[in-house]
Image (cartoon, rainbow, N blue to C red):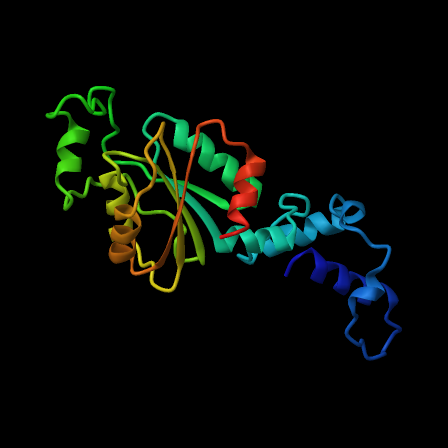
Length: 230
């Protein structure tokens, strides 16, 4: 029982005639009774205490004010990304904010150092991983809200003309069947290409849209306009 039910029961007690049958109230009969006028009364505090003692979970009024339509969008749309230097992270956050979507960072169990990312060194960690297309670097966690999402925007920096191996680890960790994945990438000049969408579709079993490469300074307005066409 939450605040709405409490208000209904309170109004029933105040207005019901003695010995009369109390009929259910509808929302219109609660006009004029607003949570801000009620939440700090002793009666309501006693009510909260009694429900807490009974083991009922209660969300206090005013602690979570969200638009229902916005909440549904967040549950159904996810922006997941991997970022090594922060560029993709910034673009992903702009996209999630523009769409009102959930945001999740794909993190490797062991973070990449500057030396790991030296593409000129054939023995660097990233170079070794990208040479082996079966490489799956361990993930830090598998807490992404993939199950709740229907549409997933998946972002990453372009490495060696394709997705980083940690993206493949992410794809292996969840069930994407029946979902749609839209790719977005960041790089100086390299595009997403054809290989990455094909690989990601094969690994995930999802419908995969090739998406688009964005520069670091892409605006939230541009991202939103693009996303709405997907």
